[in-house]
Image 1 (tube, rainbow, N blue to C red):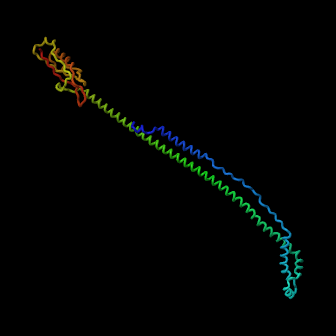
Image 2 (cartoon, rainbow, N blue to C red):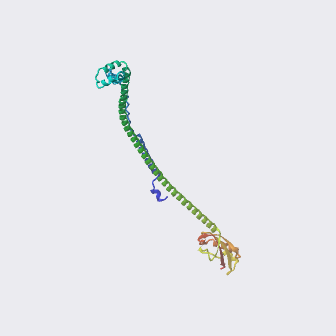
Image 3 (cartoon, rainbow, N blue to C red):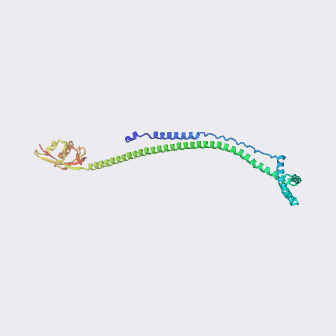
Length: 324
């Protein structure tokens, strides 16, 4: 893992911080919802019974208009009853006579009956017109006061409800934003961690592939190095040369000054040791050949290499013995 893994906060701590922030916002929203709005007390409406007015017609008031109307009507009807025209012209300037009064008294029992009915109807109409005015005034005062009280209480309740909704919306919005930020931060951290893990996995896979390729190359080289490579005696370098001496057992069959030459093929391992020695060309004396194989096995070469890699070598080594 890289050094950035140590500096980054643990995922559990980030999740705990997210949960705490969201919990605080939820508690704030619950507290705002739990706020009690002021209760509106609506005063019961008082039903006031309408004012009943009974109209009483007084005889004095009704008698006055009857007399006036009789006096106004009687002169018009009394004029056609006069038979002589000159008398009416003479009497025109003198109006304060008692005669029309007498005629009015005679006509009163007939005409007041019709005009009394009109007088009875007229005051009733006037009183009925005044009655709704009184009711309207009383009714119009109460609704105005009640509407003002109801409007103020409703306005305060509406404002409180709007404030509560606004605070709840702001709290919910802040909680949502905090949650979104926390989720985004967690996603960034998770993505970075996943990228690091993917990179580490890719590096490990590449290292494994490189190691496998290297091992395969080494195995191939080892397999190739196991194949014997032929070297001459001049190319061979002895780490410790063997001691070649003519065997005494072969002296009985040989004369002094004779020479025996045997050619050996040696199998030299990667460490330079001689694993085997076989006779490629005999000296003509089996005792000399066998002694040469035995003596050469005590020696050791420096390892043979090919392209810097130790290899198995086949060395052709001629050995010459002189009979003393």
